[in-house]
Amino acid sequence: MMSERKLKWLAIAAIVFGVLTVFSGGRALFGDAEARAGLGNVVPFVLWFNFTAGFVYVLAGVALLQSRPWAAKLAIFLAVATVLVFLAFAAHILTGGAFEARTVGAMSIRSLFWIVVALVASRAVRRTVAGSSQP
Image 1 (cartoon, rainbow, N blue to C red):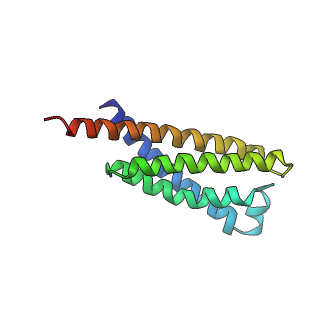
Image 2 (tube, rainbow, N blue to C red; image 1 turned 90 degrees about the vertical axis):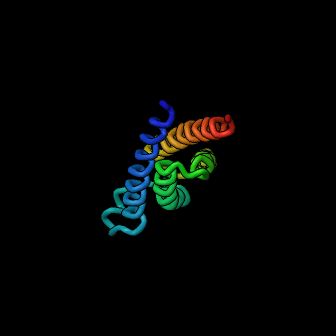
């Protein structure tokens, strides 16, 4: 019961996180010159990943709220994809690429968030499957 409640709150957070990500990423990608100038050393592949992933965050959040059977798999996908992009970003930094320190923090938060969501969602699915297999 408690993990279901946690999952609902994480689903709502995913939706809000997704909407904010799409808004900020869209502004960075498609905003006026003044908006883009204030961003500093943007790493394009990270920006594009985060922008497109924002739409998937919303989808995952809605799917989790509706207890869709594939929602946990989508959360796992987001966790893995985010960590892989974070690793590519780390390689970019280690090879001398320009970056903003706030991106390190943002990617850390994104990675941790989706790892937690994937774990909670996977546990909820396992409990549901175990509960439905009992007479």
